Length: 327
Ligand code: ATP
Ligand code: LTN
Image (cartoon, rainbow, N blue to C red; front, top):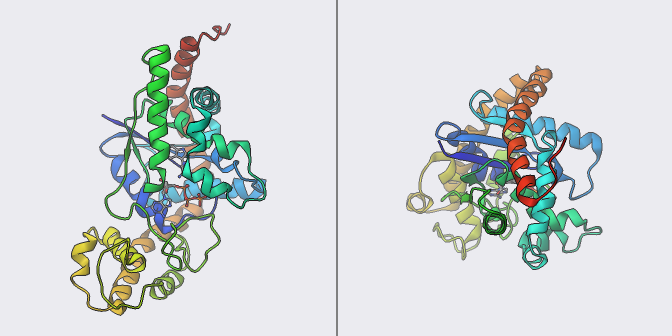
């Protein structure tokens, strides 16, 4: 079975882009691959976090992953900081990456631009992400389109390490969806929907009241020419609605466009499809939240399973590098 690994940061409430671009495919992949899914709390530390909020967000995120359908009996669900090998291999990856390579990362440029404080971790972040992936001999990484460049780097680092020290890592492939790979902000369709960006009216949260989500879709920014056409470059707002509707109903957005003459019905159908997608997740989340100890216990088991894979891999890496054997 192929190995699948992916991660999500506990940086805020999960939004529709996370669900359509990544999480729904995680659920599908668990049945055809040996999959590991990780709450990447160390990645969240690249920007200052309130400890109490980080703790709560991490736990709620794990619960949401269960609510969307990750089955802990099938997939390995765990928290990054519970497996110390991630941080250890990250250092090795920092030493494998070139400064110039890290400097080219567009996510670093976007997130550092205009920030009051830019941590060293924000710059070296892709090395930690490569470590996450390479620790587990990952074949495939289901992510949204914004992670394409980081995945390329992870591949380059695996190849470089293998060339320098001998075959050690599997070279992973990105798996990016054909529809809704980049869900855009409903108010600013020129930028991606994101959980930590402050755009409440443009961001649909997976756990927000359904009425609020519906209202946001109905008020989404479109354009003035009145034609329904799937053309992300020239008609980003309308195309975003078509992509959301397409992802929620498993239909090709360009085919959907032929069914609409006006924006009103497109918005109404998209709102309805979003509501139908979110409602069962919210119901399941509420059930899980009634027993908070359950999620924590599952995460402990998940970390044990992950550690059993990460420890021997890290031992091999130490040996390849010439680090003295322990004990
Ligand atoms: P942040 O705003 O804190 O950077 P984020 O919302 O971008 O967070 P991540 O935790 O970085 O979310 O990403 C989790 C997964 O969701 C990744 O695979 C990422 O590619 C995907 N993803 C995030 N935003 C979108 C989006 N707008 N459309 C499609 N996929 C997305
Ligand atoms: N960098 C990713 C989150 C992430 C990840 C990973 C995704 C961290 N480690 C490993 C896939 C595989 C992001 O910002 N969305």
